[in-house]
Image (cartoon, rainbow, N blue to C red):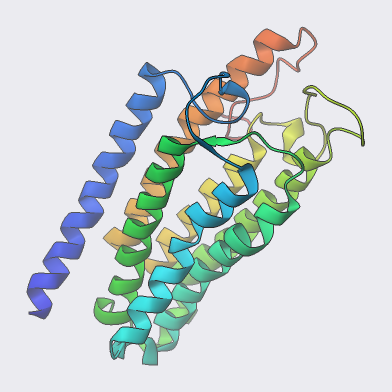
Amino acid sequence: MEPAERFQLDVLAYLQCAMGLLGSLALVLADSVYGRYTSPGPDLRVPARAAWALQELPSLAVPLWVCARTAAERLRRAPNRILLAMFLVHYAQRSLIFPFLIRGGKPVPLLTFVLASMFCVYNGYLQSRYLSQHAVYADDWVTDPRFLVGFCLWLIGMLVNIHSDHILRNLRKPGETGYKIPRGGLFEYVTAANYFGEVVEWCGYGLASWSIQGWAFAFFTFCILLTRAQQHHQWYLEKFEDYPKLRKIIIPFLF
């Protein structure tokens, strides 16, 4: 049974890579339906805070459920516990803290909310099932350069993501409306500093886990967030004549 399930988890990881490519293509071809791009209409929408909390929550709840209902033999090993903790810490922040820091925020179309929730269920199961039941690491994996560099990238990426979100939340003073050019932090170098942080975070996780499952998630994140960053970059260039022309899209000094 174990080899069969391990094969299934590998298939799910490769499918996640395909989902990343198709999702990126869909974002390019279809009109964006989130945030500043949402057009007024009668379609069903979910309040911003509720949408973020509920759509991200499966990435926290599903792994806890997976580990509670099985023996989770592999979690007796320190590398497995740390890697799963890295995943859970991110989603604890995204589902239990970030939504309640949102100031205003446009309602999320129901379809976008449902698709995001489904992905979080999918990925939460994939990562937690692999780490709790199938991932085999030597006890000294936590001293391997791949793990150490990956963990540092994960931590730096998460801090950049949180700091960049803080800058975006505080662009407007109380009572102000409209959009402003983000200033400070990595926004001095890229349009999507928050996305850059998340890409670095999950690439670090992929490196530390050294698994198809970890790298598939990093690849999916890069595909989706690169496309969104390109849309944001073009929007700022069109809306603000004084938008810094030297800013890159998502990777400092590259693109």
